[in-house]
Length: 438
Image (tube, rainbow, N blue to C red; front, side, top):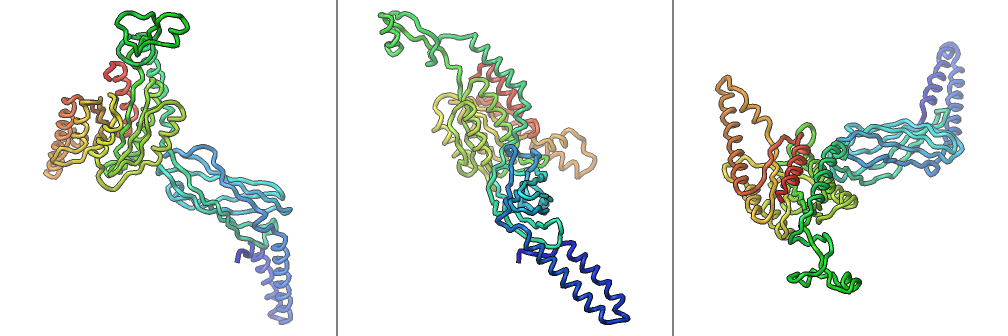
């Protein structure tokens, strides 16, 4: 039943037990104690009848800002009382465990025909879609004799986006990318590109496809369009969502770090005048966004990156490379964010990256294993540490050989700790732009 006894009801019952003291001499005082209990029960029924029903209470879950991974914030619970009686309520919100380690509870007081609110802290620890359940409440009147239980059906799905705050820390890179773009505009060079530069009179040898017929009609003579080499280039963000990216570093998975870095790079690329595309894959492609630019396109990238999830098995790099070669014919910059499996054979992603260098400029970003480098930098003190040292040296050297091999075939490589991936990746992209390597 959705009703219960309040705190003061039990207090009054305890007070009624004082009739037991004179009842030792005269048993008729027991009747007085029973009468007291009946009066208290009647007061409880009267208090219950004057309390608002469930349909006279409205509960809302209010979000003040978009949810970001590892970004602390608050969720506000509002209670609107449309009845003529004030109430005090204790509310439990069925929040997922990735937001709160314990079931959050708040206390709210709402006046008659008024609204009360309270907030509780949350800290999302997983990116993507998650579900909030219903809100449960127990409320009572100011007399605190009776209590009602209620349930607000507020089940909803919410989406946790990549770390938005990290993108705000790259303003210095945005300024630098804008400077690079302005410098390139000052160095306009006519060429065989198809980006419009200016108009001039027709000269013998000009191609007919370059004639501007609208300008010719206005001026009464042939006018030719002069083109320049395109400044706007395409940057593909290729995200590996296989099992190797499930490893956690400081509470976040490697996939979370790659997505944050990809989002930072996308914002810098927009400021540089480039178009950005996305391909996230596991055993099969998970998310794909065509090349574009602007605020709306950045929003589309964020929505897609929020839904990328790490898979418990090895990613199919060959299938991803095949999709990418079919989708992109024009030369572009391929930023491939992945990790290497520690096997004796050549990893599949290395072969795929080397294969794509004939058509595209590939930047292969690999997660560095700082623990192994720490072991290699130290000195073994006993036989057990010697075995660990030898294994670490072998793995580090094998990685170095693989990355050197892919660099010899024309690709760019970047091996960095996940925590510094965003800064290193943006710096390497700006270096590519400054040197016009694409």
